[in-house]
Every structure is written in structure tokens, then in C-alpha cells.
Image (cartoon, rainbow, N blue to C red; front, side, top):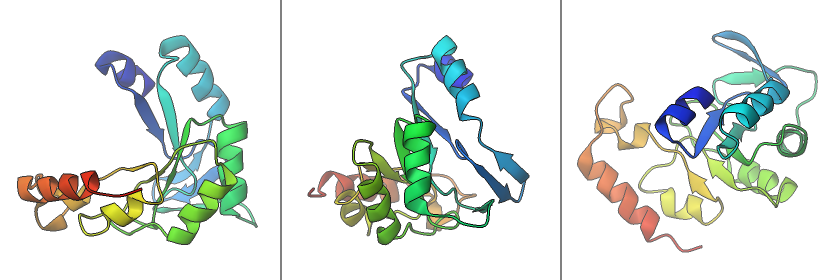
Length: 165
């Protein structure tokens, strides 16, 4: 992702598991924050790292998981520039309680919602988050396998622009 960011002149990369480890449908994914930070320093020091706190489609490894502790670890030990809160799967909304808890745990970092935001919910979500990551909601019939629907995308952007903080 960092090499792509360099080649494409991007502002940030998303890291699904930056700290800790998670069991996913792809197996165990381990965060390698120190390695990612070293590679960023060499390739693209100006590129921000946005990291999931509790990535969707995964279960954190360990006997105890606390989203606030994970947020602090991701921000202060993993040195992520911003954090991402998601629902449990693609298209499922993030819990406002999780969003509140993460924002409170790391008040000096931007916090984004990375799943489940729709044109109907974007204004409310943006009242509580620094931004959103959207994909499926813009697709024809909300189907991830379909192309972007221009009408849905326009409605989403209009609602986002009209959101009051």
C-alpha cells in the first residue's frame, strides 16, 4: 500500500490490522506496526496511516478485547495518524457507542467510520466522526459487485456536505 501511495501520490493508506492480531477468513493477520512505520519513513513519510481499531470480518486474538485499549494501542504504540471504526461486516454500520468510546480514548486523532454509512446516515455519522470511508452504499442497489450508481453517489455527497457538526 505504501508503494502504491508513493506511485499514485496518495495522502493515506488504510491498514486493517496495524497492532495486535485477528482471526479472519484469510487466516491469522498480525499487525506489524513497527515495520510499516519504518517502510513509511523510507518511502513516503508524508503519507498518513489510517488503521482499523477492530477490523470488520475478523475477531481479535486474545482472551480480552477492549475497544478503548485497542484504540490507544493503535494510536500511541502503533503511531497511527487516524483510526477507523467499523461494523462487523461490509455494509454493517459501526456502533455509535464504539465510535464514542474510540473518540474519547484518542481525542487527538481523527476517527473515521469505515463501513455501513449510507446517504440516509452520513449526516448523523459526520456529527460524531472526522470522516467516512464509503463504497458499497454508492453501488447500484447497494450491491458491492455492481458499478457505482451516479444518483446514489450524488445524494450521498449532498447529504455529507449538508451535515452539521
